[in-house]
Length: 309
Picture 1 (cartoon, one colour):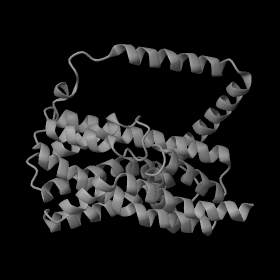
Picture 2 (tube, rainbow, N blue to C red):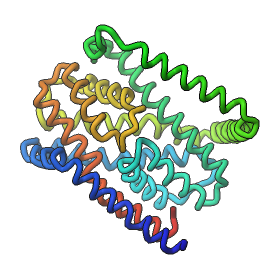
Picture 3 (cartoon, one colour):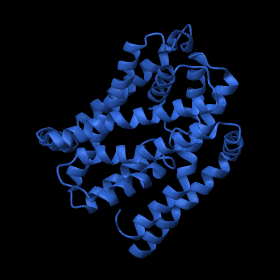
């Protein structure tokens, strides 16, 4: 039974890639067609910067744990996690891959979960902090007023907030749930203190958390230059960070669909022509999502077969 399940897991990523590619075939074909109209030196530079995002993610993962993880396997796991993240709802694929990887490396499930929570917190703080710093330096980079409706629908947000409070209150009333949550928080806080007691680990954690969104924003800037998008580089970076923060809670695999729409709107609001902004976003997603998807799925299948995850 275990061998059968492992064989299915080896094939499953490739099947998911095929399903996603068929569903998004028009976007994929349009993106490939636009590549031929761009200036290649800028696109090659963008591809090179894209390759640096996986070492940045690996650096952050290593910074979240005290034990030294095997470097090559850690890097391969991040490449595979990127593919899994685009095949499952946002964050679930990468989280599952990294939880399994850390468990195989000898960490207990509780410590692996704590390390994952610390990574997610650092990634969120790094992205939002970088956006805030850029907005302070370039306050006119993105006119947020033009992106918001005149009358925001407050009702749905109030209902969702009330429902969340009720669910959390019901869970808090269950003693077993309180015990599990309290134990997890103790483990997570202990791991965070231990990691920050070692400067090398803290530097890896927060340095990688800042480097990853900065590199992704750099890719968008380079693709914008490849198409001659008339938007300053800092404004492009702000548009990317604002769009990705806005769609972070949208439960789509890898943000496929939602990220593209948000980026086009943000680039147009920053002053770019709509047609050029659309081309930039399509090629940006081609470089960061579609081209690495198949080799990432193959890497994921190989890691499952090798029992690394």
